Amino acid sequence: MSRISTKKLLILLIGITAFTFVGYTHFQATKGSEVISALAILWIFVPAPTIYIISQIALRKQRRVRVIVRIYLAISFVMAALVLGGVSWMGASDAIAAKCTAEELAEAGEIRDYPFLATRAEPVTFPSIHEYLLTGFFISGTGGVQEQQNINEANPTVAIINGYGSCYQEALAHGELFAKAGYSVLLFDLRFQGESGGASVTGGYYERGDVLGAIAYLNERTDVDPQSIGLFGLSMGGSLAILAAADVPEIKAVIAESPYKSLRAAVYESFYYFVKLPAYPFGPIAVWIIERSENARADDVVPLNEVDKIAPRPILIIHGANDRVIGAHNSQSIFDAAKHPKELWIVPDSGHSEAIVTAEKEYINRVIGFFDEHLR
Image (cartoon, rainbow, N blue to C red):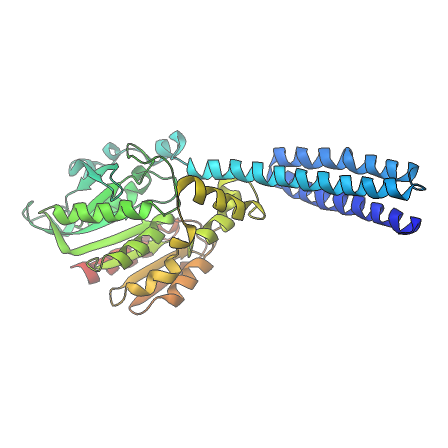
């Protein structure tokens, strides 16, 4: 190797290092990830200039320069492995520990803040198919158009399935909507949320069994018509509604709002939103870590591959056009894969699971109209 080619190689290595980390640092700085920005800056201002200076001093000694280059590459590899592994582990740890926050619960309120629900609500506990207990409320459908019904009469029922890191309180407005329309409603917390059991969040892998446990519980109640059970899910809950309906042929109808087409797609797309880190390269590594730490399989959580099993039962898919957490293309893909009867409503100027607020009147008409048509 000639001296000039060695020098060019060193300059190229330094240039690539600087360009990569300056760009990455700028991206992270604008996104607010101070930890990675600090690591990047440290890497730029310590190893790269040092190697450049050494290369100038040792330029005549080709063998030493080659050794330096090898050391440089070795250090780069080790640093990259440490950063990728460490940051991905932190992201994975945050992902499986997601819980509804006190601020979110304060904003959502409690069931007592919804008098129509509070007077009809029965605290319930039932097992997931994974054996830990889930908690929630069963609201008897004796109001609205069913007001004259005998309280013990079997009623069409809607099970509401929450999203990732959410508690039942965040779906109280939806619960009230269905209850006032005369439906019995099951509001409950998935694993690791509220008072429910379960040691972590798995993005749908074990939560699928929670929904199956909820369906089994409803089938045991004498005041629930087992032939008129509908599933309504928000975000991850929408994906779970699709998966559970694929598992249980008795489910009569499904509404999935803001669902993801696969767990991997959801992680990659929403990684920054939840853990403040870019999807690549951290997302795939984080999924790998979660799969091994939780004994789960991301490829078993793919609503896109199972939605066709719901037919001939109907499905309504809703998604905000401006969703920045799970893009509307997820619902479009699921809709394309589903068989008839199916409906897709992309809500203009609406974000993630916001349609009940941004398009309230049409939302009520579509959602209640859908269940009225298919559950009664």
